[in-house]
Length: 83
Picture (cartoon, rainbow, N blue to C red):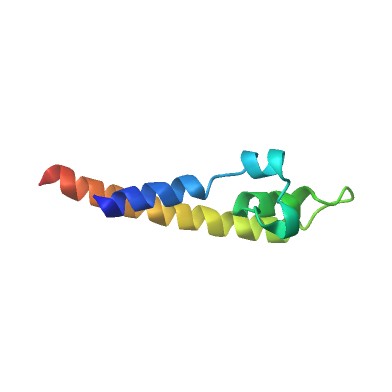
């Protein structure tokens, strides 16, 4: 049960964007920069165009990581619901 809660907390934490963006903009010396804020910065920081390749690569890596954690969560909960 603890492992399931850990996975859910990691999934929720990986999706934080709005609070650091609005309140600190990444904070002093990037102390509150999250993965989503980093992706946003790579894509839209420069008004002439961003580093779209880096933003895409980070987005795909984040999607794979979250999909893997979701798959583990579903496997654990399916195993516990059948027993």
